[in-house]
Image (tube, rainbow, N blue to C red; front, side, top):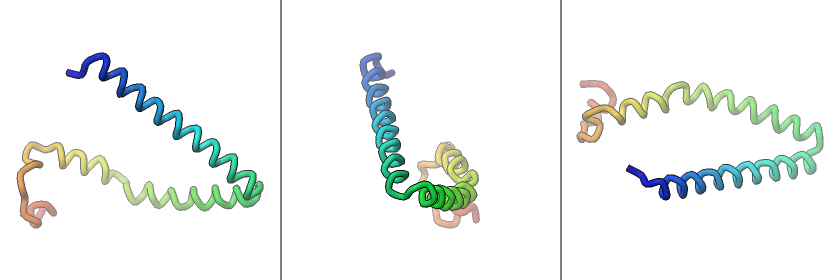
Length: 88
């Protein structure tokens, strides 16, 4: 079991990463809005939103299914390609 010291260290590393990620995100948005202007930034946002819709539809449960398959009891057993694709 993880000690309290290790848990605090891991939490602080995680929190630092989140804070740095947010900071760089805000800086990036500030630079983009200043360089592209209102119209250009709006067009960029529209394009990114449109592309993210396809990303969501592409994933559509694949991550959850993959995690469940890996966590099965025999997941570490070496399987043939036919077994991996469900063609027993």
